Image 1 (tube, rainbow, N blue to C red):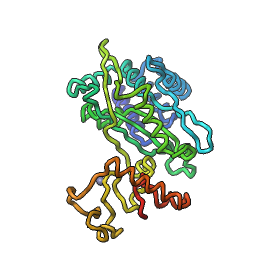
Image 2: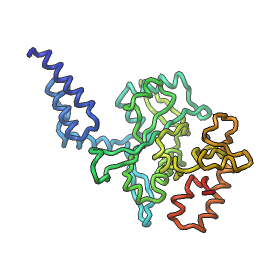
Image 3: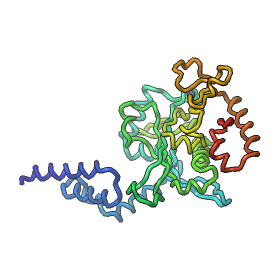
Image 4: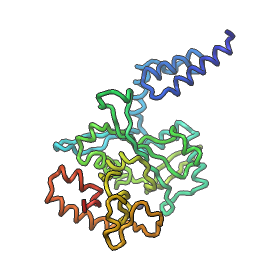
Length: 319
Ligand SMILES: [Zn+2]
């Protein structure tokens, strides 16, 4: 076999390894060894699992002028103790990644040229959440299941937005751990949002990065939430598809099989209705009035029933 054919076949093997679903440390180690053998890596590039783990730890400890890239926020556990939850600090992370990957900074600069950002003209941050399992998904013990939260600005180039590698990690919380914390994933997200949009640091007051020795500022607000029903269910403590309220934002949408649309004075709309003008959006006052009704009614019900029938962000009150 000639040398070039051997390199091509090695590259194909690398590609096959990289596209295999899931990658643990040994799989990454194998891929890096193949790349190193093919002469594709610098001589001092770490390839062993121990050096990879060391490099990962050093990365987590990286400090910027905005603090460490990974920081800890405090969550309350059900039993009263506190849990220090490691999360990625977006202020430090964006600064750090732009210092190390100029192409990333250039992507943000390009987007800022098209969509200028200011306190009055905020960018829109999209939060994407999903539950994922590390390693063997069929494993009986699902202790490695975790809620994963990623984010990215919707203003960056649309084509780039489609690449999952460009989505920034926000935080990861083991599902098992979330079960021990107050309000579970919902409580954890509440802590994360307070960290992103808090008094000390607030994405609305600006997130900085440097490109070509010039400092840029992005002002952002939470603009979109993207997740499947399971995540929404856990995040908003809502009822899900088995309930009769399908939408957290509509005050008068009910499932057809509930039969409620026919009973009321016509204000309730069955979910099969395709006339959007009949839908009424919730406003703050209507949400709080339902929350009040729920909290009064919950007193009369045991907690198990509450879990099954009541919780739709306080909206499903008439089960
Ligand atoms: Zn709706």
